[in-house]
Length: 353
Image 1 (tube, rainbow, N blue to C red):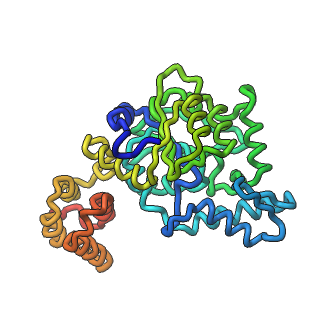
Image 2 (cartoon, rainbow, N blue to C red):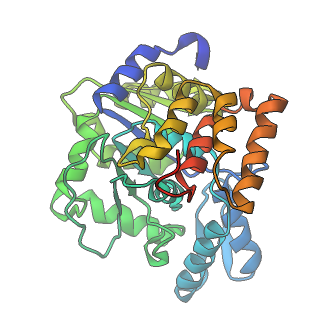
Image 3 (cartoon, rainbow, N blue to C red):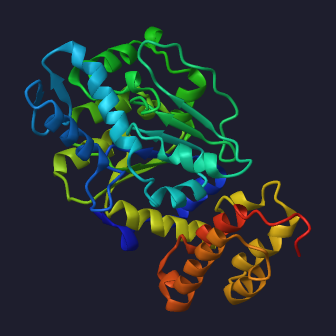
């Protein structure tokens, strides 16, 4: 198994990001609670405890089997509510800045969508697959206007979620036949056009992962592509060989946060990160963004204190200052991004200098 720092050809990944042909796959375990527990597992545990007498959970399957079909609606509503109660994991701030052109989410969350929505004037596509619905037309997919696609439904529409065996089989049957494939061609063509695929948060030994990638036609592309799956365990050799032979996926032993941090750093060094702050920006704010970009943080604090800030803004600013003085900012790759967001949200008058 490859090692993150020693064995990865970063130049290939960076070049695919730069060319707008790097695709990100987020698996169910890519999103975790502060204690490291995947939200997916916590949500299942929550439902199991709530309906302990009416649900069977088969160890290793990670799908629920309700004893009555009438429970499906309640299960989906409960899972949706559980996800919506969680704070947006900070990792999505970094992922949002990396210019992936297509992000396929196999988790039902909409955290990355929420992060994009918070960015002023940033355009993106958001869609999800629903078994019994006609899919919308989606065009103009690029790193400047990426697509966020929830393939197993979204918490925004609980009825679209796939958390039971029954729903999983309905989903798979709906996409097995080419004539019945409801995902629009402009979406499915993106799988073939990618030159590099990044998989985060998947358990590749699950049987449906192999079938899903096959049905999406990733193996059919005439374009030479590379793919890497980042896992925290060694995995069995049979699984590794299968994915390498069929989908050219190589496994890398790494924590998801570690990989995202490293890729974000290398994209920053290559000046590839999305800069949400300078899109149709108030010209009086740009000088503060320039100070942040030039790492002139002391000057930043000196100048921003001259503004008429609200009490709440002064409290936030003081927290940032303490992090800078105490040295915590040096180890926080999101610090400058958070500073820019703070400036973006300031309400100082247009004639401020």
